[in-house]
Image (cartoon, rainbow, N blue to C red):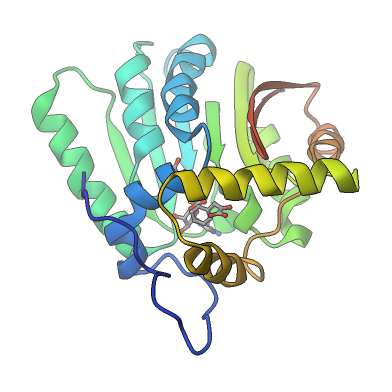
Length: 247
Ligand SMILES: Nc1ncnc2c1ncn2[C@@H]1O[C@H](C[S@+](CC[C@H]([NH3+])C(=O)[O-])CC(=O)[O-])[C@@H](O)[C@H]1O
Ligand SMILES: O=C(O)C(=O)Cc1ccccc1
């Protein structure tokens, strides 16, 4: 993994461009996501543990919005179910290229890993194969709000009995005080991880037009509307959470 530190927003920018998953972000992404998302390493590793409980023989495990393949690697470390294969999908060419390199590295270090295919494409245009595990790890928040329900409906239709969707997201909160408190604590988390006030402010304006978090209640209602039968939060750290949705 690249160890390059994230300094993308360290210098004052005359105008902060909208955040994009380009080559600059790819170079610093492992550092950026670990220092920005409280609980990220715990979520990724345990996503593998959870997936092993839901994986069905001879089915597909999807990693949607795979970035550098951290979830795919966790799936391959934990899932031992017969005949499973992983399909990782991302629409950033820069992410996909580096993801393939990292997965080749994992292949050369371990034997008997699940086969994996990395697809460069839009998850909104994907023809889903029957799947037992679908991971949306901090990806739905980057999908246009109007497209979210239909995407979840297509995922629900592809899910096999016994399978699960695992959905991790940044949350917003309907209660104004709760929202303010957890936002402040998230900023304190970033500060404690070495980000300056300028970096925090510029990153915030870079993501505000492209990343639209929902509340836990909105997630739950939309998942039920998409046909899921049960929604179980399994992790929350500050304003970041992960849910299990059962078909
Ligand atoms: N329509 C789309 N189709 C495909 N990919 C998309 C789309 N929109 C955004 N992406 C991709 O979704 C990823 C979101 S990052 C996921 C982290 C990863 N899951 C991780 O566990 O490390 C989240 C974050 O950076 O906060 C990026 O790689 C985008 O290119
Ligand atoms: O940095 C933030 O404030 C976030 O909400 C998380 C994040 C992490 C990586 C890319 C974009 C957003």
